[in-house]
Every structure is written in C-alpha cells, then in structure tokens.
Image (cartoon, rainbow, N blue to C red; front, side, top):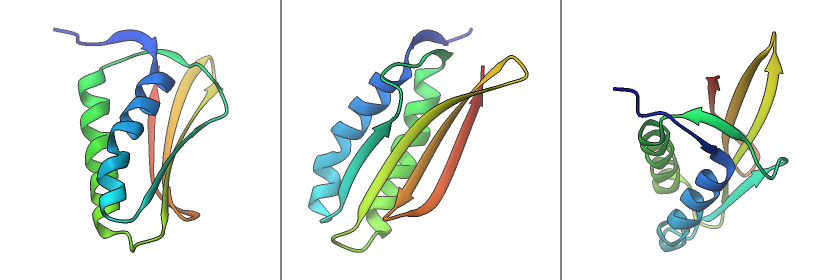
Length: 103
C-alpha cells in the first residue's frame, strides 16, 4: 500500500521543527528552519520523512554543545526533468546531513 501524499513539504518540515523547539531549548540549543521557497508541493510518504527528520534532529540536539544553533534547510532542484528535494541539517555552519528525495 502506497502511503504517499501530494502536499506542501515546506509546511510539514516547518511545523516539525517548531514542535521540536521545546526539546532543543531544554538542551540550550537554538533550532531554526529555512527555506528559500515558501511552498514545495511533492508526493512523499510523511511517516518516512517525519521519522528520519525527528531522529536526526533529536540526536543532533543531544550531542550539540549549549548555545549552538541547529538549522534545517530545504530546497528543490530540477535535474533531467526530475525534482530533487534536498534537506540539510547543520550545526552552527557545519553541514551534518543531506537527505535527498527524487520525485
């Protein structure tokens, strides 16, 4: 069974990051979300994306020293008529994770 839905992933990621800000604050870590595009409509499996992003952010928060900033940024590129979603998680300018999904 395909659980994919076509919806705005920017909204989903923004709300996901917002929901984890309290957790980050308890570890004295600032958590930000960035997207150059206000809307990116894609077909994706929310359960899969949410699980991966939450796990990565939580682990990053736990191991990040106090007074640092973790930033999640997303962008969309197109190569050979394919859309590629890129999700970057960085800590104070150091890129930790790149997640790409081709649609």
